[in-house]
Length: 414
Image 1 (tube, rainbow, N blue to C red):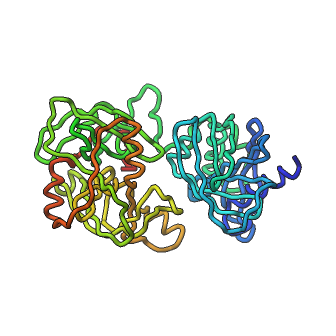
Image 2: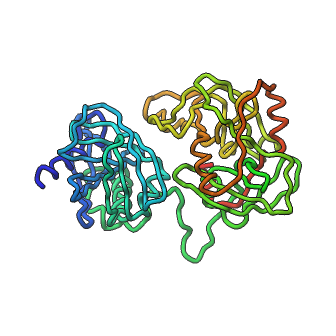
Image 3: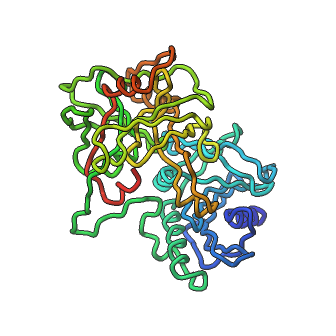
């Protein structure tokens, strides 16, 4: 057990990244979890907060958040045989349902660390069982006892240290009641939360009026979710299913609503360098009320940290494009637009402003989601090239503006 705790401390320190870390400052103590704040021992600057718990399977689990707000998940065990700096895929299943693929970097021979997307951090916070498979090895099970208050305490630690400094570090557990892994703040008791008009994009995927968009487009909506084709009447849409991990949502229009056409999903892998067309409703109400069309190429077949669920694309996308269709040059669907690389985060990390780095969810994840939702979508082989104007013209029949009233903070992420 002493060796296990030694590895646990090493993983906590390694969450700082390449530089060495010192600490802990202050304390986090919840059940078997212990931790605190850590600094870069070369500069003395605050680097991260973390908490660790040992498990009977011989693995220690570490949950952390760095000074930039990124969530981190660390694993350590004396049985690991890793090469420092190597990357390994990690498949994670929460409560036997929600799944995610992460990519961890080996800190040393006995530990590794993965960056958690915010939606995965939220899932971790509310789950009771996590099953982890590292690079295809035997699955490891973790009962997530006290995980929610631990995540809250870690977030509180980061907030307090950034505000007050390491010199005033104390017991970060005492004020850990506020939910941590969330980007929405609850309104004060007795006062209605402020809402704003929020928009995104979706597309019709079946003759039965099923509509695909991003989960984050409808997450936080208050009241009705509405959709309409350009120039057509607005309909109230029903939420059929959600997948927060893969950021997908399925809506359905009323049976009285008719659609002339719907997308066909490309039944052949896309390649790096292939041309693509993105369609959506960015900055709706500020720019045109019609959809916009942008073109580019597939820059990479994986996203941030080699996330194989995503494509990296060069077509320009903006807030409001989320959930929109991504087409190949034959007009077949090859992805769901999901995000652009956050410029502020990259400036902090690299000192440079990213250009033409955007992402889309691959059709493999989309088809799995539709299969699980029992949606009768259609696939097609790419046949010949269409002009961009023709692709856009065809898309008018099934590309929808999605709108709702949303909590003010929720709208910021669209």
